[in-house]
Length: 314
Image 1 (cartoon, rainbow, N blue to C red):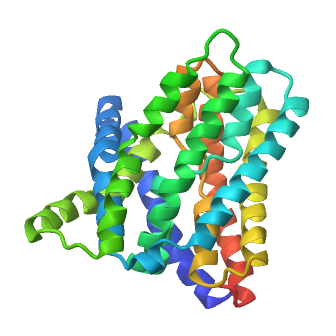
Image 2: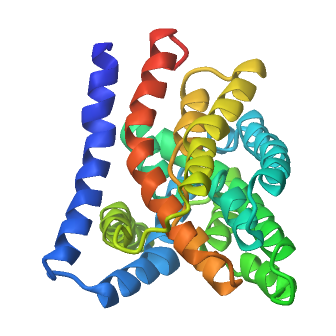
């Protein structure tokens, strides 16, 4: 293993793993509780993370932050992979309420927390800005595809219009849309707005990772190991493999290729559990997929980074 890979494991993966473990330990020893996790997660989603995304994009060079090829790989690769995965799940997963859960868990990455943490630790502010724009557009696609596949298999429990309208009100998407004109036209923000926003932005990743670690559910595991394994293998291996291969074919190298890898290889998004539960799917299976992919994605990320770095692609 190269020294650069060891540095990556220590400086990028290490802090993420430490905060995830800390969150899980804190809730076990009752220094924090479910109410703290719920309110902390809400604070991250509605204020802190939107502030981080807005500042990182609005203060970035638009030509570097909005990379059309990078974004295109994320959108085209995700859509193509989703269609393939949905077809495979339809025939390989027997339980109707698990088909959509396995599909969503197999591609919907936790880019907003784990992925951004990886990119920020690896590439600094430039990587964070580019990853934020990528996140905004691919997240919209994630939500649309997740709503579609979960509704497709939940007869009599469809709320497609309501779910899609919720996407348009997503604070992360609103923050990114508001930030893009500032980046494109090089508008400046008042100093007090930047300073206040930075306070919230600096709160984002530590609090989000603590809450993610605390919310990992190991005691109520589903016993459906075939579907857990299928979704985990898809999310941690095949989805990032397809996106990185597509990025390589279209000529992405260096930081853009690294962003594709780090965003795609992040574990299944915690938001997938909330969506499954609200639409009446197998929520125990969804929680189990999140927990297993979170644990497995960390060593897989190190191995994948080492493979690309050893070939001088990053």
